[in-house]
Image (cartoon, rainbow, N blue to C red; front, side, top):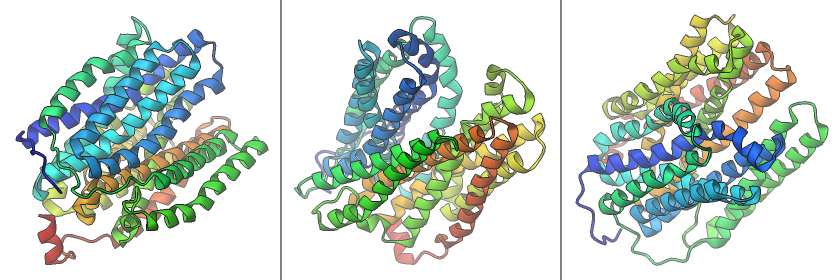
Length: 464
């Protein structure tokens, strides 16, 4: 890597800039829900139209993660991070000032593309800035952002809605301006010394694969066991995405600087991490349905059901930094297995037993603790360890991509099963048992990860 004048900022100042940027992106996911009724009225939308607000965001978030992360390897972390923030803020402004639904969707696409790059680039910056023995706790602190966003999002959304739904997006302008100012001053500016052409063909093919898979999974979930044409269309799109995968691999093996380097999945370690990330995405998506499950189980209001997620949110906030410290102390493998075991225990508690409020809170806390572990430091730590420095951003992008695909598939599975069961409690429990079964398989597979003792002295020297 060639140095263009490395930033003298302290690692903790860098961490603060990354923390606020990731929090801004995470908050947008948590607060957009309260804006939907007002958006629906203003633009005269129906339920299918509203779903596009999410579908467009999901698709372009998927596209943004690997492309922005790869660009950070080429043009430098600071420029890629700043570019992601600029896109996110610009998209927010377009959404807030949109005079038509088409303009609003265009803003959501730009916003999502920027948001997709924020976390993977932030993780790559941590890998460049922090020594190996402190990367775990740094990643854990940034990982705690998602629990904080889940807690603050509804509160902030409720406050801003008193003025207008537009402020739910305009609030990103002053926050983003502050992040941009500090990021330009503090983040490392190293970029690749090699001048290689950007892999345009690979980026286009990857975009096509992700679009087909995303809309295929979405259609399969929307069919919900009752619409045969939805299953046919969703299945056709999904299969088309799978058919394009060999072409993508062929393109990437011949590219000078591939967007998705085949070597990223060349090691057993990275393949296992991708599978674990998929399972984590499934579980994370399942937790979105917990308020609906609480309504079905306890006949409470939706507002009360949302407050019943507090144990899960609390363990997300506390667990991520703690898991990061454990990674530094005992290694990633044991911590990852502990996170999978917690998720499995929580999912089984939701799915196997008659629910009481106590068991609901306990299962939520267990699952939240597992997610805190898996969404925070350990998986990203292993990716940093396994990839070359000039592929660090691309590796983080691939991890984010695996998580996002798991989230899509998990939402489709839970939505399909619960709707087929007419929203009854048994439908939620069945869906959680299916995800629990998958998590159990992944827990067994995780024994193939290398422990600290199994890694060679050369590996440990390179890491440090």
